[in-house]
Image (tube, rainbow, N blue to C red):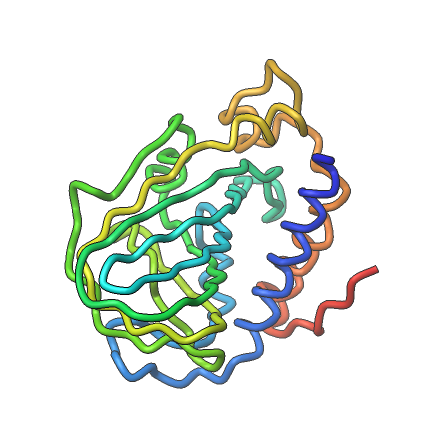
Length: 225
């Protein structure tokens, strides 16, 4: 079962990367949210990437739940990536919201301290809750939805329709059950992120796609096996 979950997460991550790589570099309606396209240079110099797959819904109150994983850039190893450290995330908000959406994101982490947060059993952004900008989420928008601080940049693709203007906090947890199923009971988050465990075969297409896009600036559409 764990191998199937890894393969599903990897395939979804490649599709998100492909979607963001092939978007036009056009500013969003709200400039502070960045651009629709993920620049290849962001992959070259980052310390890690977090892929998140979130479902959100709300009528006044918002609720979000999702899964994801983190991979760390391996220094001095030809730009390779670590095995995935699996996480889950939940969030709740109070404000003006209406609708439902699915948002798949790539969070670019700059600096080892940003990556290190994910080695903790859990952490949240509740202490830094801010008012979210009003965003209409639809299938053509890229959305900067998860704000992890100054050392992260989020690029997203979405489906559904939702207006969201709310105060919210996000909590991240390690998916201990899945990590242990994939890597064994004794494996630690540090082992995974430092490249001390073998990379699952299912994640290798994602690694290859990241290298391809970072070095050539182009990415072929993903085709599942």
